Length: 328
Image 1: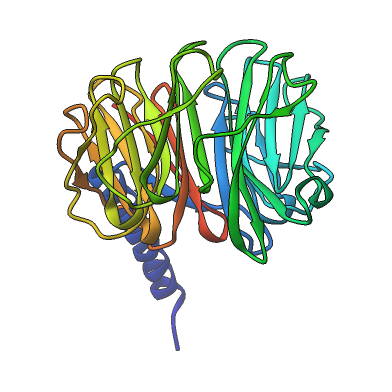
Image 2: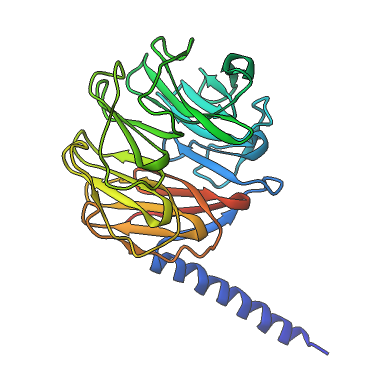
């Protein structure tokens, strides 16, 4: 029979062990995990507008918002059952959300979301559209990339743009028919898109035209991040990570010593960079991405998206997993 004192000792020991694990996680990598109740679905994207306000989006139209830096989360109804793939705010009031084949917009800091554009199969001879990434290069001009598939086989890319702040969206032909997965702009003129088969597309004229860059790999790239118009990084299949210091004129494949697919990369500082991916993989660089060291993420679940706002980092993924990191 367990006595009251023994129960107290066991409880104290459990608390002590938990504290050790949390402190160990902070000491080794700074990433502390918790879960959001998504009903079993994955979280595909995370975006923080400032240190307090943020959103996570995932499967079955799941969207949740925090106004206290992630201490509490409130679910929001977007009016879709499609997977939410990306969230992006152009400024404090205007935000954009991609869910399946539709673009949603908010004009009131994410209080309400309305559908701005949907791409129906009849527009594409019965093929299905999936939208993955949205970014704005200026107040009026924004870009969305994705794929067009028939019976789950990609048959073409999709690249659409707005020049009126997201009121209307029009398609532009890209110089690639492969799946386009992520887009990033550093100014109103210069932007990049990555995708299937090592595709990197570049514009120097605000998206009026796009050209291919030679990246030196045929592995699919899932995410790209440019710190300025010269320094950029992209990640992808089987631990692939590439780096440029001349705006993509040349790309260098960087060894990562991991085989897990990397799905998101972010440089919150000039030297300090992070990448996350499958199997709970987290990599860190402190030398502008020349070398990378694997971190202890305290999870083996897939991590799909990474976001930093000043000193606070967030990663989200499989089964509603959320990791929070606070930089020194």
